[in-house]
Image (cartoon, rainbow, N blue to C red; front, side, top):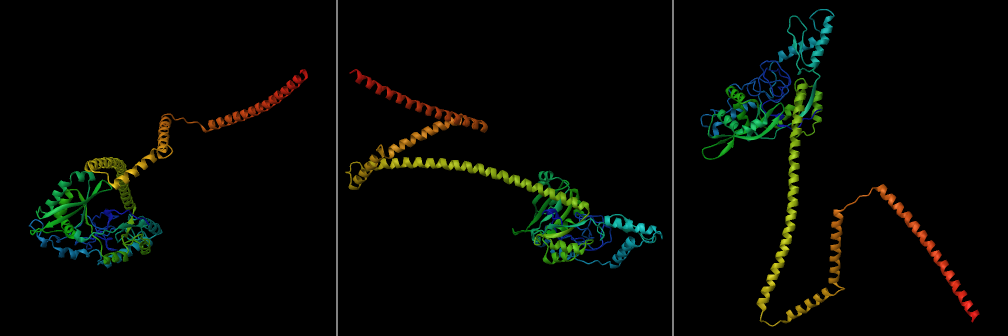
Length: 500
């Protein structure tokens, strides 16, 4: 199974579904459809035709009929009751969970498909078997026409047919926004930089499309880049009442207004290629979606996809049919990866900046500590002088005399050469020497190769051994000289006694 990155462009909305779960398809284009289905006029989710593709919603190819979604219209000064929420309720679950009403047509289509794949009677000889294999190959591929009878039109093979082999199941993130949040997604066929540079003009244009009512305010929730130089803009509309209160227009109501034919034309002129609501699904809708496998998807594969769902609370399985859909999801994956990398780069820069600020702050703290110590000493000196002036002219008290004796004792101990003062002087001299040698070493640094160092050690060792041997020889010679000197002294004494 292929798991898709969480991206808002693939979030499931209440405007579409999995294409009617086996219903016949329409000519309406779908932003998430995987083929070009045929038109049979099945009722759609919002009062128009319903898309059988495996996506989540129809695009601007469908209309909402007489449903206006905004009651008396946006240009007549609506109050809080201006938005008709009852009309959009009747179309919320209409096409999503409705069962097909053209059962005979579907039955005939299945019979014709089976005849085209197993027993065509077009030529009446052994060539029909070859034609059957050719039809099977087309059905597996999901494209082409299957001829099987001279009197019956050929079967149109699409990628939604049950025999198409290029199918997989991925997962998309379910939105968590409420209908009261009023979030509606508009996909523009423009780059993100162009949208951001013209954001104010875009808001004003949308406000004009809504009738230019002063009680309505268009707000941009977010802007995100999509593949193929498209941009997703999330908007919501706030309605203010005369008494000063305000509320957000429900998402389904705003979407129903955008789906009107004249409004849709104006949005297309702005570069909008797709509009959808971003609202969460109810538990009943999720259950219905999971219980009914999409058209052309094997129920066993669908059940396995539900079992393999990594997070059933946030993700829902969606079918992927054909290489185009796989390529689209791959582009979305790459786009999301780039966004994540951009965010990581921003976080890395923020961390580096915080580290610099921390270093600067630590230096300032150390500086302030030194300044505090200096100010403390100055304050102590001021207090001493003030106390001396205050006590001037008074006799020394007993406790002051006792304190003076203790201070004299401490002073004498500190000034003793063998006590603290001598040790402090020794430490100070060692610190000065270390600083001096450290400065010299820091200026001059030499590095010796390891092999050369071993040779030097070996040479010095040999020199040491030679010196030791020479010292031992010298010692032996000194002992011999002492013996000779001792013998000479004895001989001189003997000769002196003889001559005397």
